[in-house]
Length: 193
Figure (cartoon, rainbow, N blue to C red):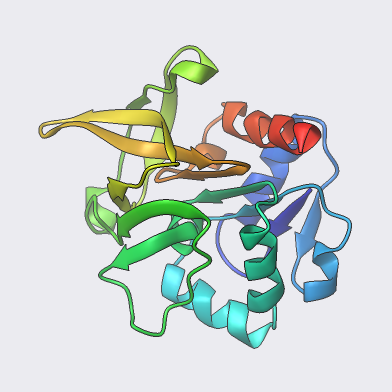
């Protein structure tokens, strides 16, 4: 399995994947996508990540990967990259469009509004702790994209974890907790794919 290693929580995702028993490749070049069973697009800063994907020449092969429905997990900025529509993004920001969602960058607030809370993800069993850091907010979920997890807010239940086929996206950072169920989900998806 691979972790896109251009920017963001690369080490943390790699450690979580190793805890579920898989070998990890840190992907920095297009040819490193070959032979992978799945890839993680980590959190970080989505516009910076977009520029790095262009300059490293990974954008086109990664877009082909996602459009082929290959197993992918995107967290925070990775979720933004996987969205079909991005609010408050730059006009030239790259999109991989693997998930039928609209996200608002920093939708839960800037850095000082970061928080930790429990998230309900029924298919994974008990609630899991989730870390939201400048997290994107999922503002629309299109038909064909399943809501896996919700966060209870003053406005009601909001989608924070979604899946479309073999592609999963989270508004939060599962790699910053000891709970590896999201990473195990990716491993299970890859084994079935």
